[in-house]
Amino acid sequence: MIDKIEQLKKEIQDFNLSGNDELEAFRLKFLSRNGEVQEMFKLMGSVPKQEKAAVGKAMNEVKVLAQNKFDTAKKELESSTKKEFGALDDITLPVEPSFTGSFHPLTQALDEIKQIFLRLGFNIADGPELEDDFHNFTALNFPPDHPARDMQDTFFVRKSDDPKSDDLVLRTHTSPVQIRLMKEQKPPLRSIMPGRVFRNEAVTAKSYFQFNQVEGLYVDEHVTMGELIETLVMFARLMYGSDVKYRVRPSFFPFTEPSLEMDVWWGSENGGQWLEILGAGMVDPNVFDATGVDSEKYTGFAFGMGVDRIAMLRYGIDDIRLLYENDIRFLNQFKS
Ligand code: DAH
Image (cartoon, rainbow, N blue to C red; front, side, top):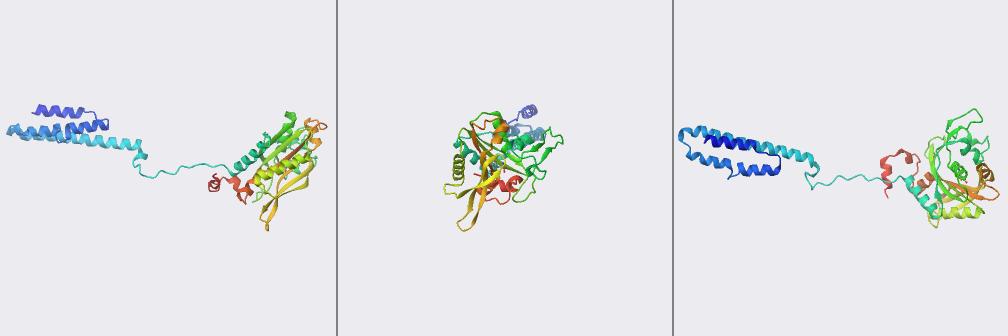
């Protein structure tokens, strides 16, 4: 009898409980009502009286061994599956909301501007944010003593006393990209040039030390002022709706002659104001000369607009600083 018990004990000890299937097989084989442990107890009746105590003790040990082995393995299996499938513990729990990003209002405004000019047959070009004095000022027909070159407005990265070496600046506008384009490519040219620009200005709700512009340039034979105005009106209608109220005023820029500015009316019939949205003009022949474009053969128009202003108008943003602080509570409002 004792041998039989020893053999059962060994079987229990050797049983491999590595998974749920084995656990169940173990339970059925040893611990169930008809399992081998219960069957063993049934043999008690045939055990001689004087051995009953010892045999009973041995049987009980085997029973406890089987139960302990089962309980320990079950606990281990449960905790390891929990680690693996933690999130599935309770599939009726609501899922945590996942974070979806959104496009920055500047990106959205810029995309709209790009789409409009792509429709009008323009392509997209770009140039560096770090410029030399030649591209940012000289080639654009800024006289040497022009106030825009003053330290007040321009971030100088390298200021040289040697008149032969150029200053390096953070570009103050996107117009230098016009110069690069005219130097690198032959007319006809029809491009817009979006980009970030920098001015050494006090930070307020209305001005910031960096902002975004979109430059435009169209150079070909016989380009006229009429085409310039038509293009700008087309832009205003596509951007602000066909009932947009606009006006075009004469202005001055060193690199265009004649020059103009365009305003759109912002507000209702009885309350509102004119807001300038862009500067433009016919490319000054001096600019053609500086870039090697034949000013006898070609004419052209150029324009430059502020993307920040357009985004602020479009979304009713009254403080430009919000566009650069990347506060998630602000940005989350521009999900499209
Ligand atoms: N560069 C000008 C500025 O930053 C904007 C501008 C005006 C660009 C007239 C042009 C233009 O191309 O023709 O204020």
